[in-house]
Image (cartoon, rainbow, N blue to C red):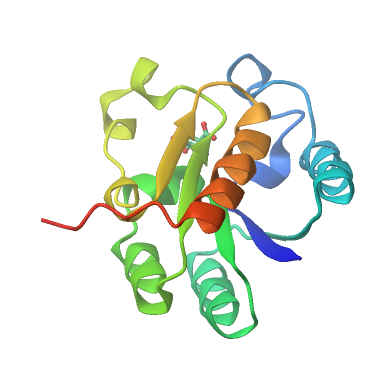
Amino acid sequence: MRQILILQGPNLSRLGSREPDQYGRKTLDEIHGEIVRMGARDGFSPVFYQSNHEGGLIDRIHQAGDDGTDGVVANLGAYTHTSVAIRDAFLSVGLPVVEVHLSNVYRRESFRHKSLISDIAVGVIGGLGPAVYRLGILGLLDWLENRTPKTTLP
Ligand code: DQA
């Protein structure tokens, strides 16, 4: 059974009450519950990790590189736009990552248009609310099955 890490970055622990017009009213636990039910139905094993700290996210990525994790679906929150260290952590473990965002970052402030993860991700999904996690997992499972070649870095 595929083991998929769902990595959640800063402020996502506040979902449900945080800027509901932007992120909806579901809590992180409710979103994770949907993923658990999907895993039972579709035959994958989800593991969840949320941190408001860059170092915690980096340590968890390193752990995923050693513990048999097959791939990562990551919403890195604001660190998406700033963190060279998280980018380097993904490069250091070589696991496939799908970048997801609840909101459509391209409809928002220009500082959200830049991602330090997108060009090393196997896919990027955004703007559809909590469905992005389920869509990201489906895409990752399909990628793992077919090993779609990763675009090479410039
Ligand atoms: C987000 C978008 C980011 O720009 C923001 O900092 C977040 C959430 C999203 O899911 O839409 O914290 O990643």
